[in-house]
Image 1 (spheres, rainbow, N blue to C red):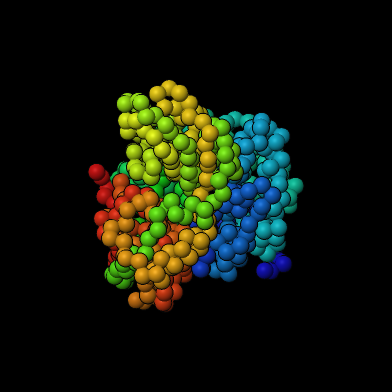
Image 2: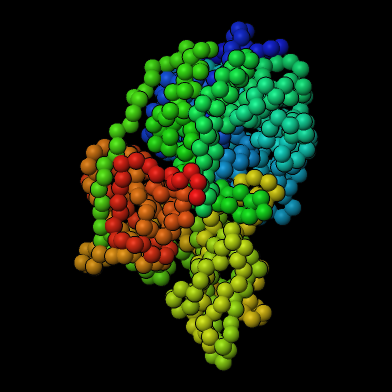
Length: 597
């Protein structure tokens, strides 16, 4: 990295690079949603589109899954990502939050924050600010030396994120601005809010440069921005060119011509832009967020966002249309290949399976509790938790299990036989139990993603409040958080089953783990077809692709080429219900579902 710096500033009418007017043409790439071996490819395609800047959020909870931990390896190597941006001759905008929304689990805030009594989230409350200060201090060695005035790519840093939609604590915003300066940030600081008078007023400070988030009605939105900021460049720092999907709803797209027209309007008026998203990427693992506006709505694994680069990083019609618009105002780079070749079509049998019940001692440790604790009480912040107690109702013919609330989905079993499902999104609280129920009651609860926007961020997961049968509380619980971050203990058991010559799973009946092994027909990405599978999670070579669900809209899982090898790829699936067939099938292209149901 060069030690000689350049100057980036905010002028009366323009951004200024070395005192010359300069327009920001940026695109959003979330390093934590893209395999690190693919970062350089996506950045190059941004340059080919005519962009000069890359923007990224920083997901605090990804870096800090537990208090006192700050991880920066592999896919969390933010420094390497920014260095790759610089190598392409591009600049960077960094948005460290601490809250980011981004349709990401808990809006990027670590769940452990909410376990600290009295913590005032997104406010000037001292306990919260102390945690944010530690977070910023951990980011400082990564960000500070990579600012443009020190030879790096960073030209702007954002303070909070759309804060005007949440609160109006000016002391909080001021504390964040001062904290940026204290750790050594010298580049200009910005805020972003939707361009309404209330949000812009609540989410800003006079010393911070205002930017907007919108994707249409450009003249009106720029006029509103100008009313709140009489001088300085106009910028849409979240130009929405698509949208995200939720389980059970249709796949969202936006018309290419309308997006191109709105971008043209923005650039014709001299505005700067950050395209949200340039490429959306994928909510690998258990990282997706959720919305709750009366009904809980978890977000799907794909974060394709109908962006100019699709989930696999391939240019779309929108890419070329937006590139044409940008070419009217700035030079564009070398274009990427116009079309992506179809990916291989093949299948591999699920050659071995083991019931979840046989794996419990390999994936966690039991603890005992009088009443059911939440997942958060046990420091378990994503995935699954199993609750177990004993029933003895030999003389009762009518029985109903009731829970105060389940977050977010509970499968109920009696002596391992399925009884039913309680779903938060369906507002379900009660299930009938078999008459004269006697035996082991298991309740497998899945955290489907923490709410990322609004007052419900930070809600604990699991069984909330007491569980009752016919009005009487159930007590004396055994509880097992399932640790699935490392799937190797399960994979080893499946290999043992395969070596013993167990019969292939046709179909796979859950809850159970299954294993398939396949060679790679040719290098590159794959698309795993989840048609005919119920609900579950998939890993390939230990890398968690994320969740699938028959309710859709998403019908494929994206497999990044870098996680694959030429021979002996190992697929592990946790199927919660059942599959219609006993094989893993790969298809030529992604299928993100219908545009309407």
